[in-house]
Amino acid sequence: MTNAHSRLRTLLVASTLASCGALLTAAGCDTTRAPFTPAPDQVAKNEYPRVVLEQPLSGWVVVSEPVVRSGPGPLSVSVPIRLTSTRPDQFSRVQYRFIFLDSAGVPLRSQSDWRYMRLEPRNQVFLQGNAMDDTAADWRCEIRSAR
Image (cartoon, rainbow, N blue to C red; front, side, top):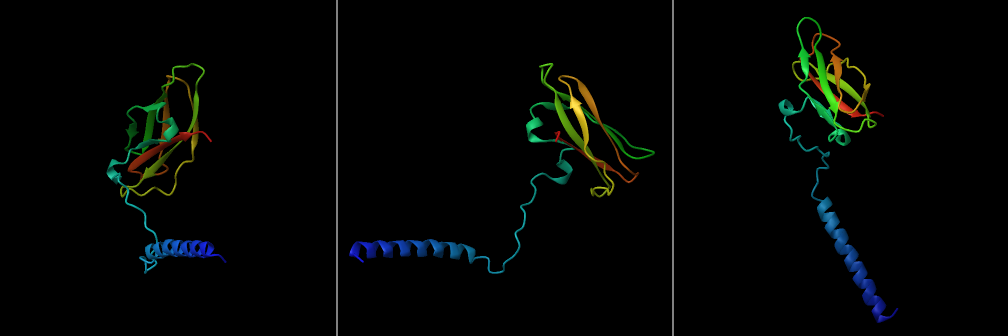
């Protein structure tokens, strides 16, 4: 082996060891092997929006003030939404579901499935949801593109 090859080989080995040493040092900091933990949610539970949209719909669907009926019987919610497109031939198909929560903010065991709705341009429609029992105290509505 020539002197140039020997120097190149030494340089490569030293470079590799330096890289591995940096990786081992970084990996070696976690000596307890603790599980990974999630970051805390920056949106507080009481500030979480009641109606959420899938991102591609956010520029096209608008929501009006929901109507909530509570009293004798299960909680009932109606959410008016509208597709803002101005082209008469441009409609959208969406799915939505309501999640009902008890007074502690825990989702109730019985929930409805996803429902389908066709949104025509500029026309308001109403997404309807009813809790399955009388213990519902709060609600959320999720809207996504039809799948």
